Length: 85
Image (cartoon, rainbow, N blue to C red):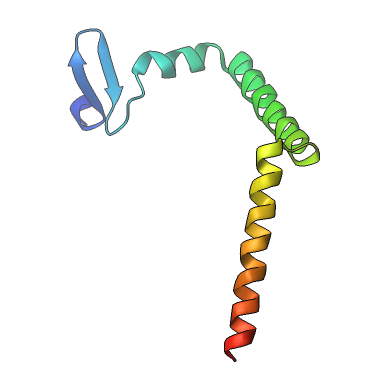
């Protein structure tokens, strides 16, 4: 096993997982602070879920306008398809 098979040594203080931009210090931080990182990620994902639900309940005016335009376009396409039959 060669370390070079798994890591890119970009500089003495910059070692990354091969094929990624993930530095070895990120992995070490996670391993030393696993509970805190997992709690942070859980909170972040839950927040994202809440925000998406809120956006669905109260979309911004631009979203409503785009939805209306899309529905109008689809209705026009359906009308043209029926006329050509």
